[in-house]
Amino acid sequence: MAPKKDEEQQPEAWKHAVAGCTAGLSTVLVLQPLDVIKTRLQVQDGAGSLPMYRGTVDALQSIGRQEGWKALYSGLTPALIGSGVAWGVYFFAYNAAKQRYRELTGQTRLGPLTHLASAAEAGSIVCFITNPIWVVKTRLQLQKQIVLQTVGTHRTPPPPPAANTTMTSSPVAISTNALRNIAGASGAAAGSISKPLPPNPNVAYRGFVDCLSQIAKTEGLPGLYKGLLPSLFLVSHGAIQFAVYEELKSAAYHLRDFIRPLGARNVSEDKTLSSAEITACGALSKMAASIVTYPSQVVRSRLQQRMDSRALQYKGVVDVLRKTMAREGVGGLYKGLVPNVLRVMPQSAMTFLVYETVMRHLQNISNEKKM
Image (cartoon, rainbow, N blue to C red; front, top):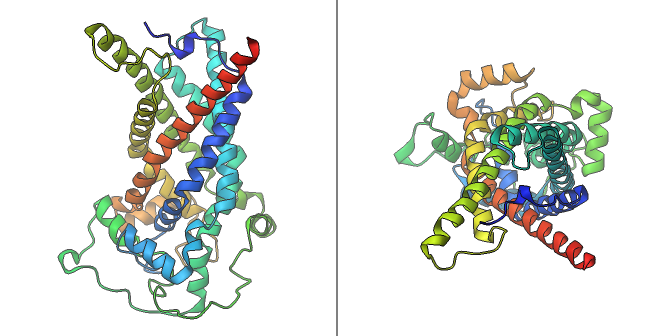
């Protein structure tokens, strides 16, 4: 019977931090453009004050045409810092919590509830450490649209396709129509500005440090921790994801044990999962968590907008929920779902694959040194 990972000698804590940090950096570099689109879509408030996209492809084309392709990597620096720190701390704290529970219970194999508790603990720690970084990332990703708003150029957005002249409350339908809403001004500036925009010191941030400094000076500590409450709620997202991931890994091991005696070919004798198995476990666990917790991501993004944006202003989580439901219905809480799903499933698969691969290499290096 294949040994289970929890039954083996546990790796040193620093290895989890290094592997997690490497995984976080890798996924950001590959998938940042989809994160920019998702963030821009999430902050649309239904008030018609921001530009309108009609789909993910249209958003990519419009952003590239109006802002340049570099705009798809806006907020990259804080994203790299935040993701590297977040995943490094998360895997470190998660595995430290699991080890503590092993020592408390005297058990080597932990159940789903223990995995949930360990992941929730790790997620809470990460929230307090990284929330200021995510606020900066969100502001940098959105600042171009605010510049376009303040230019004051207005153009009636193009009508939707004839086959779909009314917006529905379906999350997919709203995601497709609303993606057009974010790269320019007042539902309108997209496609209408042909010359470079003038400098706007009242709106644009000059980079990560400048953005962090301006928020700290003008909004204080509360400004750096906007969106913390929904972020803490999203701790449940990571808890669900990691608990499902652990159960899927366990199921994969059991499936091997079941199939091998039947004489199935190509069933690995290795005690570690294959890349394909890790990828599948990572993607499926993320899908389960995303379905449950996506509305909190929308609430968080809207709270983290810059206060001088012409978008709706919100007083808190309850106010966001009330105004969103009044203007957009339930579908407003699922705006950006399509690009988010396109991003998070491969992102999660990549994160776990890189993490498990780096951990394996670090363990092999340690084992070789002991020989």
